[in-house]
Image (cartoon, rainbow, N blue to C red):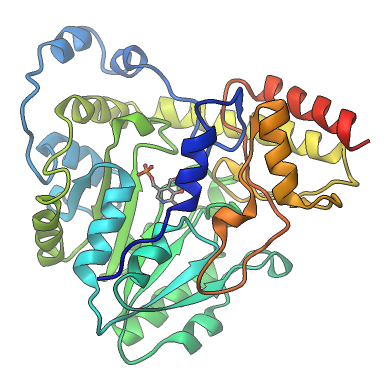
Length: 378
Ligand SMILES: Cc1ncc(COP(=O)(O)O)c(C=O)c1O
């Protein structure tokens, strides 16, 4: 097994996220408090929470949590769900269990790095790029051309980090058909699902669409509760789930029981939380677009389909890496430069940066950016 490379995005955020004034690249909505979550569970919920023992919990996840998660799918039973410490642990366990050196994987680029670094540490991987000139869509013919006799999984992520792209429904259906014809697993990272600019473009979950569809999701993004570290995988293949839970025995073993209680409350109160997230995303995107359009000589924008981040083009002569570095060092505003999305598999954009628009301090963050730009880039 090869050593995993540095996870550039997490290193960058680890360095800047907590020490800077404005985190203007967050991909999650502003979190609510433990008190707010418990308020969704009605009278007595705070006392019940405080009386919970801090014991180990079931490695698959508490039964009522798996029931609440299963209810988010059209066709899932609680037994189809395995919980993890965030989506990240699910990604790790999935690739480690499904792949071996004889396999081949296909992944989209650019990507949240574990989507390619994990399979690359195990087997051959082919990247298929999403490109701005093609409206960030996935070319299904290119995916088909990349398939080999030993291709075991195709890994996608819509709404996509960092572009916000949601694959068109006919292409998604074609992708499922392609996987089905070849008996290939479809691993679908759906962590930004339920944050769409229009519900009509929401994709089905891979679990519901395909018998070998594996859906990854988490409380972190649409629910805005990354601190819970509760993620999950839904799969029809109970043997795959069992192999992953045995892998999990070497990782977190089980979730935090306190987080499980809060996740159940949040999932049962999902309508309120999701309405709030979508309102934040709508307002934040409008402010961000207005801001970007103030500086047409510096930025070229577009409308993302979903999620809470955008990947606009930077046109300044200093280049986007220098722009992002100066912005954080001189103005205390963190955005992600494109080097954190560089891929070992394909070329990726080198002139874009990731902005997030889900945080409470968006007005102050944009004002700090504006002042920096007016002073240095007039
Ligand atoms: C596409 C994607 N997948 C997975 C993750 C990991 O999610 P979590 O931090 O909740 O484990 C992220 C986090 O940003 C992500 O963007």
